Each structure stands twice: as C-alpha cells, then as structure tokens.
Image (cartoon, rainbow, N blue to C red; front, side, top):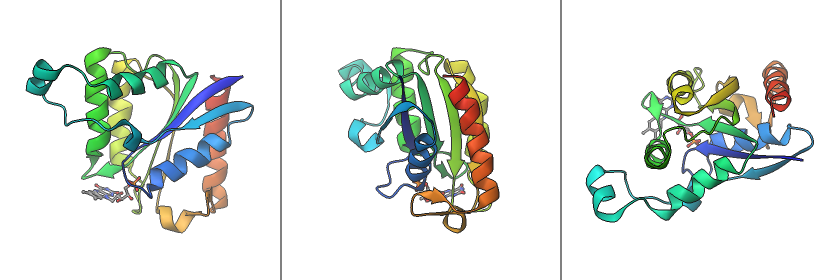
Length: 176
Ligand SMILES: Cc1cc2nc3c(=O)[nH]c(=O)nc-3n(C[C@H](O)[C@H](O)[C@H](O)COP(=O)(O)O)c2cc1C
C-alpha cells in the first residue's frame, strides 16, 4: 500500500492549513496517511554562520527522511504577508542544505487556504514557481478561499469546492 505524508506550512496549533491537509489526505483511497506537524521538528532559524558553527540539526534530517520515505506529499501552505510562513521557509532552507532536490520527485498535492477570499493564492504561486526546481513534482494544486465560510468540522462544506478538491485528489492518487 502507498504511504503519504500530509502537513501544513504552519506552526499554528489550530492551523487551518493542517486541517485542510488532513481532510484532503483522508480522501486519498487505499493509502496510509501520516499527518505531520512542523512543531514536532523544531529548528533554529537558518543562518549560514549557525550552520558553520553547529552543522545541520537532526530535525532537518528527520523531516527529509519523512519525505524520502513517502510515496507522495500533501502540503497546504499558510500565507504570511504574501509569502511562506517563517516556519516553512526555515525547514525548507535547512533541508535544502542537505539535498537541493529535497522534494525528491514525490508526487505532490499542493494547496493553500486562508480566511481571505484569495485563499493563499499568492503563496501558492510562489511555491508552484519554486518547488519544481527543488526536486518537486506538483501533480495537482488547490486553493480554498474564505476558510471559515467553506470548511467546518473537518470537511469542506461548499459542495462545488469539495468537488473541485476531490478531482485534484484523484489526480494525485493516480500519480502515486
Ligand atoms: C503575520 C501574518 C501575516 C498574514 N498575511 C496574510 C496574507 O498575506 N494573506 C492571507 O490570506 N492571510 C494572511 N494572514 C492570515 C493567515 O492566512 C491566517 O492566520 C491563517 O490562519 C494562517 O494559516 P494557518 O492557520 O494554517 O497557520 C496572515 C497572518 C499573519 C499572522
């Protein structure tokens, strides 16, 4: 059976992106899902001087092992000021010091959501532009706008958006 990892580019305890990643990954049939939380992979803020003095922390290796040990990735990005949340950029930077192709060609369902009407569209575009240069294989992407109007109790409540997501999940599943 395929195994996938799902996580959010966020460290919020109630992360709406983690909720979306957990929901989307639950729709992937006949697949073992591990939902990861960046809070369990705490890292110092990346700095070249820190790296020179202390090397690359174990948690960067551990997260990269999770990616490499998976058959696919469901990732939903939080948008902070039109860009990655710091915690995601940080683990991305650390892992890139181990392997520039860190996403390891794993099929990826890339998503973003926010409380606003654009649903993290800006960070999604940034990631779509960059991740393919870093070993990424984005096979489907999805943005959920206005999270609190369209998501409740672990599921997308807007029928049309739910159908859209399901189509993207099917594409992802077929690429595993
Ligand atoms: C510092 C900061 C900047 C933010 N900037 C944006 C933004 O540019 N666009 C947006 O849609 N939401 C923005 N938000 C709101 C986030 O989308 C919201 O906090 C969301 O819950 C973050 O996702 P998460 O719950 O998965 O962490 C920002 C929030 C913070 C704290």
